[in-house]
Length: 124
Image 1: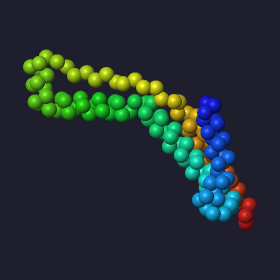
Image 2: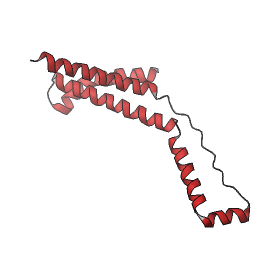
Image 3: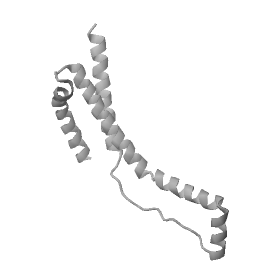
Image 4: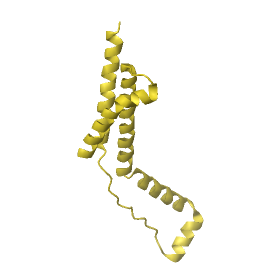
């Protein structure tokens, strides 16, 4: 949790010079865009961690192997003759928690949306 807080604080601080790098002039709208992009990056990282920690790909690969093993008549005959059953053991890996990444991304996106709405409504 400290790592996410620290990295989001660093990203927030680096968002100010990033405006100058990407937009070549500092404007509030450009800064809000950069904040939103940072939030999207955090959301994508959190979503990838959520998918990987949920073992989606392990279950998908296992069910594909099982389907093709059952669908293939040749493989069934080989298994019956040899008297074996193919078992795949899932590899257990630990991933960092995805919730802090998603919360950080949502907070960056919400801040940018609030500032965007403020810019739109108070400029008139």
